[in-house]
Image (tube, rainbow, N blue to C red; front, top):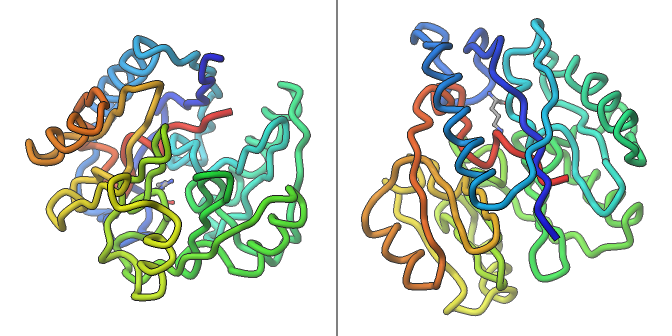
Length: 265
Ligand code: ARG
């Protein structure tokens, strides 16, 4: 079946506040360039075989373009995010409304529990690997596990820069995993190593992590990332993937890249 991906055109994208270390409100954000970069990403994904669905961006939420944070999708269920910061909270209702209108079962979590959707929860080998501390509370992991009847493996995000699990951990088809070992503590690395065989693990360097190489979108055998190193490109290709790089510099200014701009639905 074709992958369906939800995206949001960056009509009002901007860096207006700072809620992660990448965001700098003094740096100019070029919206026309952002739109062009976003369109190119969308075209690449469509060409790779994905069906792209769109939600309109609302004016009051510059980060709504990062649809990965809309919800955690599991079958027809959409567990809507409870954003940690007030700046992104209005997105919750916009996304919930879209999922309702499009026939999904919308599930909400208790208000006090932070949880940032597919930005912090990713399926690999039948388990959900979920990040916690910067944006998502670990208590939400237990609840999600109960709601979906799926084992949730909790991984603490040990650095400030890799604040959503999708910035440092990316499951690919065939059980492969791109990840940045330094973003996790010793226990986290042990858990990853116990769950993913060595030949399936694609570890990135500091330089590659910093250009968001773990924030990849996988459609079939194609993997799309921001511009990265030749080493990384060759490594992915040696595992049988075809790798496409596309410049997403405007979104990096907000601490997001390819994967953050998409949500598989
Ligand atoms: N500026 C956004 C934030 O801090 C970026 C979100 C990136 N999304 C992601 N899934 N990693 O919330």
